[in-house]
Image (cartoon, rainbow, N blue to C red; front, top):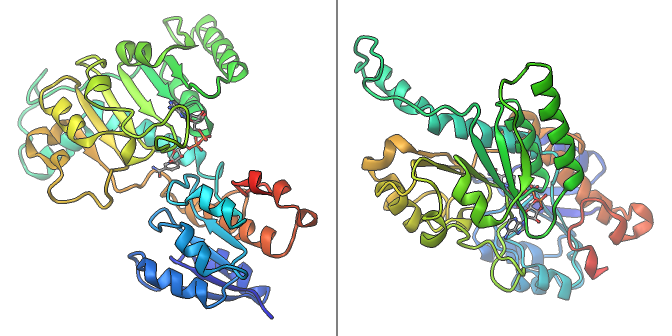
Length: 366
Ligand code: NAD
């Protein structure tokens, strides 16, 4: 019997053809919106072996129950997996895979560009030109932006994407403050400090810069830019949950001249508090790629026209580059890595030892 796979979303033919060419029966949900949960349950209950999911699908005990005895793997096309109930997956002993690493550089560079876009007012500038409101050159009218070069950036979460963001900020002669309660990568941070020292000694950057781990509060109080690179962790899922890590209290710790950059997950930021912070100028602005509810509702206070010049909004696009999203090569693309994770489980690669499969997340269950 060929393996049967249902994909809740089209992840592109180059990757899906790897399955088809091996004789898999692949059904792809044809709409661009996610399927209703009832349809996922129906497909799983019909006896599929593998389920390809996106962050838009809530995968929990109901789904695993429907697939009991038949469903063998859930392959998520994303590094974040906060939509998958890990405890339920473990209870039903269903491995789920993700696509870490291949999107690290694309996401970090997008965060880096967001920082420049909001601080240097790229959107306001282009809007001015397009709306024929560009007057004569003037030293400070109609507005100025804030420099990024030489400023201090706080990196909240020094995992894969946080470290990649650090590397990019070095090129802008920035001082770097790091915060991560779970894992401090002193080897990497030491190497970055050496790089900063060398750039200074060689005359590549004028000021000596530093990188160090600090407390969350110190990071917020001292940084000109705060860039968030944490997973969404709800209370009970971690000793250091990240749900609403940015709220009225923590946003008020930031400098009035500072910007918040979020490419992690929307619920990490309390959006009501953030809109208030920007509107009342507790902080200078924000650039957001992710939201508590996606797509961003029409009623969101983040859409307030009064803050539009200092609030950049993007459509969960940080990993949205062609090779990163679609390459069938598991070493390059999310689609390729997603499909490989599924193949590893179904074809019993690594001697069938799930705990040895590189893209499986919940290894502890095996
Ligand atoms: P990672 O697991 O390598 O790094 C996350 C880091 O956050 C870890 O070092 C962890 O110790 C740290 N952390 C955990 N709790 C923390 C807390 N309370 N405070 C500070 N740090 C904390 O993950 P990654 O590959 O770097 O990805 C990070 C997140 O970025 C993903 O979970 C995902 O939600 C998001 N993401 C978004 C996009 C996008 O398109 N916008 C793309 C890729 C990833």
